[in-house]
Each structure stands twice: as structure tokens, then as C-alpha cells.
Length: 394
Image 1 (cartoon, rainbow, N blue to C red):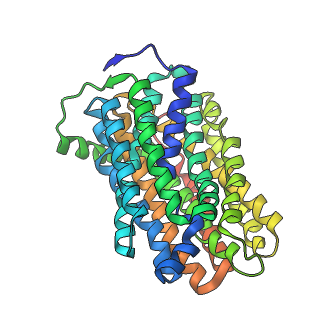
Image 2: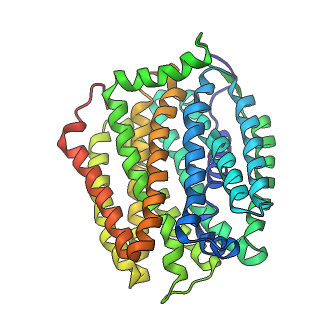
Image 3: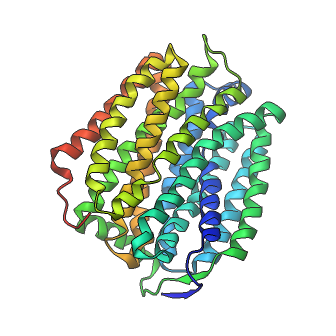
């Protein structure tokens, strides 16, 4: 591996955290605006939910097809180029006049915003082994904060200048971030002799040959499905009686999720100390319990906020632990490990969005809560029934 840097400074960690958060946020600006967008384009809840699903499917495609390129090309140039292309996707969304155009813009943004998942393994590569989990936890906290604060920012900007303003502003911020990354990132290139088809094929080889990766990918898939089930339909709940909240108020609920995300940051440090198993077990049990409070959220805002805090804390805790563990498998293939794991992760997110929108349309918040609790129970069952007995060290 060739590298022109002195390592990973606090300022660089902060820049990379901000960049991952801003990049992944672009997939989530629509969620608190779904009710407004549905009204603007005369859409049903199912059709509006597909906007979120299209973004996440685009993200999943980018994870599988683009993230492995980090093991082939110089990463700083790749990161900057993809950041600019993600900004272009948001410009299409901002100027969209039809549902098809909006879906195209969100899908393209999702495809190229996987730049966040090239930054995470880059941080793991630059970090010292003793601090790798802590660094990954910090970067991933930035990523999840981006997902959650996207809702707050989107709601506030929409209340000021309409939903299109959100995408105009976000595209400008992405261009500015591309400039900052070009100036701040070191040049890092992984040395390997694989061509692109071999690079993609090696992802499946890694999956086939390592049960730890398969297990952690399945846990991530089911956990992020829980996350999407909650957040996709929450705007519909809060915009309906008895709450009747505006986009700005709905967006503020992202702050509760952000607090939960920050609470999960120590999970990487615990994994560094050999406590990945207990962290995962406790997190999955609390994730299931969080749906009790979330189900009561249709009657009590306090219960809903408690449920949001616990769910986002536990989903992020599992995710940070998963990534810290899988990065030990094959250090020279971290982008491909990320591609395999995160493809599974966001397929779960896309499935959760579809299931959530359908559950809301047919059974309201009770249906959404039952769907979320079912996925959480399945996740815990997978873990308890012995899938945690993988080869490899945690």
C-alpha cells in the first residue's frame, strides 16, 4: 500500500466524520418530507415510500459495484469524484417535475453517496490497530448522525423555503465538502493485481469463505431493516391526528435519534477490548424491547422518543461492532469487506422501507410496530441459535 500521510490526526478524523455524515444524509432528506412530497406529486403513501426505497437500492448497487474500487484506485481522487457525482444527483432531485425524475435523482445520489463507505475503511487503514475500533466508532457516529440530522435539517429548510430548498442547499454543501476532502485527505492506494471482474468476484469468495462475515452481514441487514421500518413511516404518524405536526417539528425528532447514535460510539472501543459478543447480545435484546415504547408512541410522544433513543442506540451499537470485527478478517481487502457487509445492510434498509410503507397503509402504526418487532425478534433468534459461533476471532 502506498501512502503519503503522517497518519490520522483529530482534525482529519473530524473531516472524515463530517464527510461520511453529509454523504449518507443525502439519502434521508426525503423521509420527513414524504407527506409534503406525496401531496405535491399526488402520490399514495406506497408511492412516496418508493422514493426512499429507490435511494437505498441505489446505495446498495453502489456498495456492490463502486466501493470495491477503493481496493483498486487511489482513494482520495475516487472519493472526491464520487462526492461531486452525488451532488449532481441531488441537483436532479431539486429540479424534478415528475415522480420518475425524482426517483432518478435519488437513485443516482444513493449510488454515489456510497463514498461514505470508502471513507470508513480508509479511516480503519490509517488508524493504529489499538485504536481502530474507536476510530471506526467515531466515523460511524458521524455517519449515523448524518442520517438522523438529515431529517431535522430537511424539516427546517422545508419549512423556510419548501422541500426543493433542501436539495439545492445539500448539493452546494457536497461540492464544498469535495474541495475540503481534496485538500485534507492523504493519497492512499492499495496494492493488488486484480482486475474489476476479479475484484467483484472476490467479494463473493470472501462471503463464501468466512462465516463471521456472513453472520455479521445478516445481523446488519436485519438491524437496519428495523431502523428503516421506524423512520420511513414516522412522518406519516406525526403528520396525522392527533399530532398534526409540521415538517419542521417532524424533523426535530431526528435529534432524539442523534442522541442515541452518539451513545453508541463506545461500542468500537468495547470491540477492541474483546467484548464484541456481549455488546451484540445486549444491543439486540434492547432493540426488541424498544418496539414496546415505539408501539405506544401513537398515544404518547414521550414513549415514542424513548423508543427512538433506544432503537438508534442499539442499531448503531451493533453496526459499529460488526464493522470493527469484520475489518480484522483481511486488512488488504477492507473495501471489499465493506462492500459485502454494507450491501446486505442496505438491502435490509430498502426492504424495511417497503415493508414500513405497506404496513402503515394497511394497518397504521400498530402494523408498523408489529413489523419492526418481528424483525428484531428474528435478529435476536439468529444470534441466539448459534450463528455467533463463527470462525475467526472477535
